[in-house]
Amino acid sequence: MTHVMAIDQGTTSCRAIVFDASCTVRAIAQRDFEQVFPRPGWVEHDPELIWSTQAGVMAEALARAGLRRADIAAVGITNQRETAVVWDRATGTPIANAIVWQDRRTADACARFQAQGAEPMITERTGLLLDAYFSATKIAWLLDNVPGARARAERGELAFGTIDSWLVWKLTNGRVHTTDATNASRTMLFDIHRMAWDAELCELFGVPMAMLPDITPTSGVVAEISAGIGLDGVPIASLVGDQQAALAGQRCTRPGLAKNTYGTGCFMLVNTGDEPKFSAHRLLTTVAWQTGNARSYALEGSVFVAGALVQWLRDGLGIIERASDIEALAASVPDSGGVVVVPALTGLGAPHWDPAARGAILGLTRGTTGAHIARAALEGIAFQVADLFAAMRADAAVPITELRVDGGAARNDLLMQTQADLLGVPVIRPANTESTAFGAALLAAAAVGAWPGFDQAPEPKTERRFVPSGAGDPARLDRWREAIGRSRGWPGS
Image (cartoon, rainbow, N blue to C red):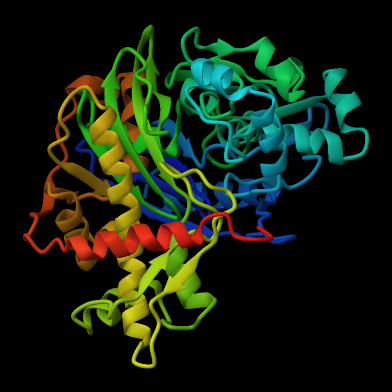
């Protein structure tokens, strides 16, 4: 029993990955699921569809690995964070679709709290900025817009959870309602100093505390699976938000080690040690993980649109047929021809935090081609990350001398070289880019003693090191800053 299965429930797909005792991937199963866009700026998921899709890939991964239930020592869960699910405790039925982290419907509510002067207290306790990105205002919206929901929540009939909580509930047939500190720290309801739900924040946002899950360690046995999907009796031994999982999987276990995940969005975290450090540049302070009584914290910057921009070029504009085509198309021209793409399709995240910003393509001429737009799109992703890195360097108490990368778009060599040139430090791509799933597996294996302890795991093997080429162009940075300014505060957003 030295194999570990990682559940990797992401924004656009559900995956299950089986690792063996040498930390090698034995099998992967993945299925996309439907994205729901009821109105501009709204993004929803069907929780039942997430569950059925996730259950399906778990069974598929086990079969592909040629293993039985008895071969699996533990399951670790990593998940999209901030996405809010509310369901009936008696029936397990969601009261509505989940509101996804990208959703902006509660931006006006956040603006009202901002006008009331609530943000300083929220930031001091939670490490977060007041933004619709996080779960609290999403929960309140569901309670206020689903008939009868608020009264039922106050009677203790409804449960809230981020996706990890929802999956644990389903995997245990409703026996266990829990989350861990990494996911709880993304709700705007959790005190990261006391490591507990905060009654005053719950009252501020109108979220009954009876809805909230218990808090368990990031690495530790939560429950055994009893959902009848071929894994009954296997312990669920880690719960961890996807970006903290990637930080663990990249072995960023010491202060100053940083990673960036290029997924639907971009998420950069730097380990800051066992005390929370607060940002002067509008970055987030978050829990990195909790193992037993020990805890680590991180500074985080979130870019809302990265890989999603490539999907939009494919599905919205038809510039490419497959997401993987963008590298060759972008490399077919020597530069972007003066074109700048600002990927603010759902507003701007850190360090700008402007929900009213909108995506922009600037610098178009009659000579602009799809290749120029493709190259500018990759540069737009890299520029957003460079903005985060500059803010993180200014806030971190220790030097950041490299950036470890993972995620689907990290396989794009042109993007990674562009990134290294903009940052001025090496960009390190591991041989195994499944850092998120590996982090969850590592934390689960440590909890049941299947592999070496979390702190003793080996460093990831490097597949390629992208060294700055000296090709940085200050004029490009100036154009980027000008383009950002023009995309902000868009009328009618």
